[in-house]
Amino acid sequence: MKLHEKIKELRQSKGLSLQELHRIIVNDFKEGAVTYRTLQRIESGDTDGRGASLHQICTALNITLSELKKDTEEEKSPVDLIKKNKRLGKYIFNGLVYAELLTRQNRNFMVHELALKPQGKTRLEQDPSLDSEGKRFEKYAYCLRGKITCYIDKDKYILSKGDGLSFESSLPHWFENTTNSSTYCLIFQSPRSL
Image: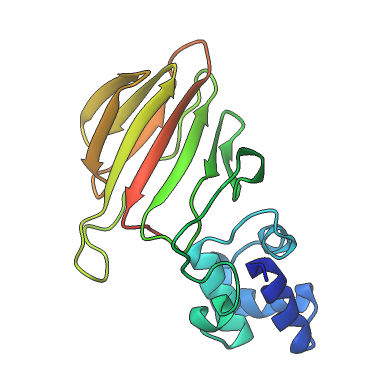
């Protein structure tokens, strides 16, 4: 069973419509609540829910994340095959930047392909210094095509095709395409951040 099918099954078993589930989430999480549209996309399988979204769904359904993932493809499997036409979710930063998730939530790391159209840039990001187990958050950017400018703290790095850059992601950072053609890069993060 797929995770989105399990969410729908659990919601229906509690006699809740999707709108009622969203109202419970909004009541619990206020302005930090997942949007109704995102909830629709998660339940229809159009996107994998991020950790924070799944946490909110579990809270509203009064279950644990382990209970939600039990007997689904999201339980830890030794192998995950992600086909190009079956990517796990597309996150649109703005009209010029989007990221496609390449790893499932059940992994300890995260990889996404970041696409930046000309003059596109991501928002400022900064991860916590350490996760709950005391591990330091790190990222690695690998340029697949074009050139990408990486701003990390007060420094600027320009990556061309084949170049890589690793850094502690607790430093403030963002990525920008200052060229006239689209840029693509892979972003690896460990440990996985919500």
